[in-house]
Amino acid sequence: MSAVRLARGFTGRDKIIKFDGCYHGHADSLLVKAGSGALTFGNPDSAGVPAAFTQHTIVLPFNDTRAVQSAFEANKNQIAGIILEPVPGNAGVYVPRSNYLEFLREITRANGALLIFDEVMTGFRLAKGGAQEMFGISPDLSCFGKVIGGGLPVGAFGGRAEVMDCLAPIGPVYQAGTLSGNPVAMAAGIAALEELESTNAYAKLEQSGAQLERGMRECAKAAGVGVQFNRCGSMFCSYFSDEPVHDSATAMKSDRVRFAKYFHGMLEQGIYLAPSQFEAGFLSTAHGPELIEKTIEAAAKVFKTL
Image (tube, rainbow, N blue to C red; front, side, top):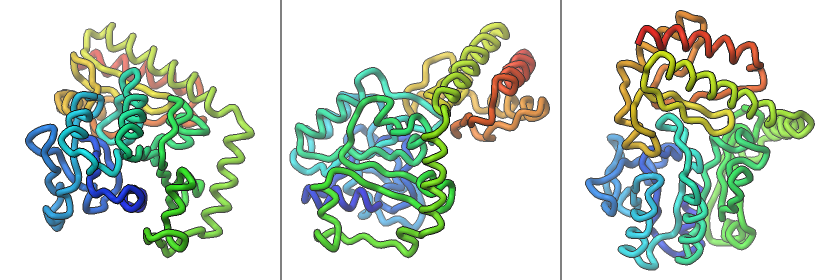
């Protein structure tokens, strides 16, 4: 919410582009679903949100460069910025196509708009520098969640100095928070970040993720079950679909009845996954090779029942 307000205040523009399937908190102007076409304004996704609050939010399909180009052409000098999860994790998990993030960086810069990375999920998870380090992209603003506080409730956003200087008291954009700079959360966050820096966490997570991906693909193929196993670092998702999943629309085509059977089958094998097809799965450093192999063996048994 604050990053979007800042983008609007810095650019003097009202419209924001977000992508279908990406979640950015429950601020009214961002709690929207796609309209009937690529260029329509978003419709409120919840009761209690006036349509007027979402009239400046343009909802587009993820991974579609043409849709973004069309939106900028149809709204010249009106778009304040683009906000996105660089690796969406709120409709399962799907990854940006090659050069897609680079395209977003270039088109926002060319049109005087800001690029906002919502790294609430990817920040300090995919790499110490988040998705922007993994993909080599520098957004104008970044948002982080409670990872900043070592798991305690806090959030943070930051970016280029000239943009951040628009915040009060230096600039005209208002921002406040009851728990801003809470010392307990900040101490916990520093401790967590120091622990990440002193360990080989990200290499271990990538090894575990690669082992899981390889095993899941092999046992699905052996069972003759159509599964799209999407992974980026320690984030993953299994879609029961015969076609690749690269956006919200293709994610919605997956077989949710089959996923439910898969979930309960895995639970019976002692593996507790997120119970929704559209939740991301996460690995942690506690998941060593033996646990990954146990998960693959369980999936092999369950896939055969599907």
